[in-house]
Length: 142
Image 1 (spheres, rainbow, N blue to C red):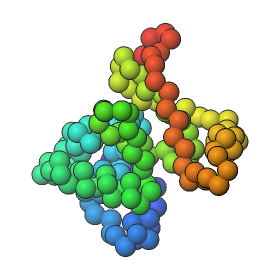
Image 2: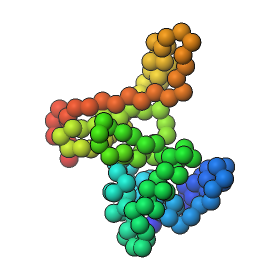
Image 3: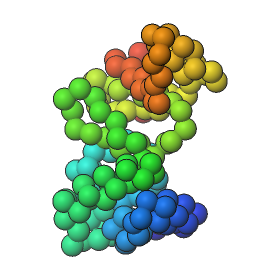
């Protein structure tokens, strides 16, 4: 079941970018919003197949790319691993558990990103900052 509350924002954001909402884009976006576990394209494909059995992996990749281009989701990369997708657009960091492969959102204290940007050399301005923690859980989580 798709969250309809986000349908309007998806449709509007796509329209603002000169694109339209398709059933495939809607289902892919819904999958990302429903389980916010930073899935890979292959994981999104597996989840979408239940609702759209004829969808191809290429279509899922195209949908994800469109959602990234329209600033509806963020692409998150960890070294040589597959790209993961995050629908949380609020400023935050990520913790990548190297033992489990799971990725978790990390809320940042207000003003931290401004502090980080303040250390840039004179004449430089960053329009985005990515903070990624890598490690393992200190104690097992369920």
